[in-house]
Length: 329
Image (cartoon, rainbow, N blue to C red; front, side):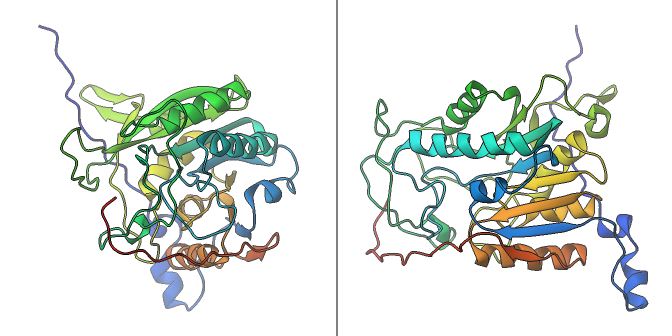
C-alpha cells in the first residue's frame, strides 16, 4: 500500500531582531542597533504616489488592499468603499498597472485579498465588542447577477482581471487560519481561509524555492500552496492586520537581502517591519496619516529604527460616521 504523507501545518519562524543585530549589547552601550536596511512611509493616494517613482524600482510588492465592502475606514475616496464591485476591481487594476511599471522585470507581486457575501439589501452594519471595525454606515448593493447570500468571489474576480490586464497569474496560495474568528452561521461552514496570489510581470522572474522549502516526511520539499498561519492581534489597530508569518515566506521567495520592497497599502506596517528585520528596504504608502503613524511606531518598537513619514500628496479627509441604533446585520 502506497504510503500517504500526512497533512501537517508547517511552522514559520520569524527571524528575531537579535539574529540580525545584537539588541542587548546595543542597549547596554546606549546606542541604536546598526542595520543597513532603510524604510520610508509616504502618506497619500497610492496611485498618485506610485506615479512619482521611476520604472523598475522595486524587486517585489507585498500587499493587502482594503477588501470590498468589509470595512469603513472613514476616508473619502477609500478603496473598498465603492458601491459597485466592478468599480472596485477597476480601481485596483489601475493601481496595479502602475505597480507593474515600477516593478523590476524579474519582480513578483504577492497579493492578499479576502472575500465577502452580498449584503442582502442591508444598508449599514453595526459594530460588535469583539470586532469594532465591523461597523459600517454604508453597505454596497448586491452586484448585478448575484443573489442574496451569494459568496461574491472577489479574490478570483480580481485575479482574473489582473491576468487580463497583462499580469502572469502564477499560483493561488490558500492562507488557512487555524485561529479564525468563529461565525454564527448555521447554513454553511465557517470560513477560515483567504487567498494570496503570486503575480509576475514577466515569464521569467526571481523565485528562491530553496529559501521557502518545508519539511516533509521524507526530508525537505518544495513549499506547498496551503499555508497554515495564525492571525495576529495588533492592539493599536482596529482594522485587519497582515500577520508577519504570512509576509515572511513572500519576502524569502521573492527577494534577497538589500532588495527594495513596496507595499502600496501599508496599513499597520507589517510588511515594513518584516522587511527591515530581514535586511530588506521598503517603501510603504498609506492613505491616512493616523495609520501611517501607527506603522511608524510599530517599526520603531520592532526594529529600533526611526522611519520617516512624508506627506506625499494632499491628505485625505476623514468622514464623520453616522450612528445607528443597534441591529443585527
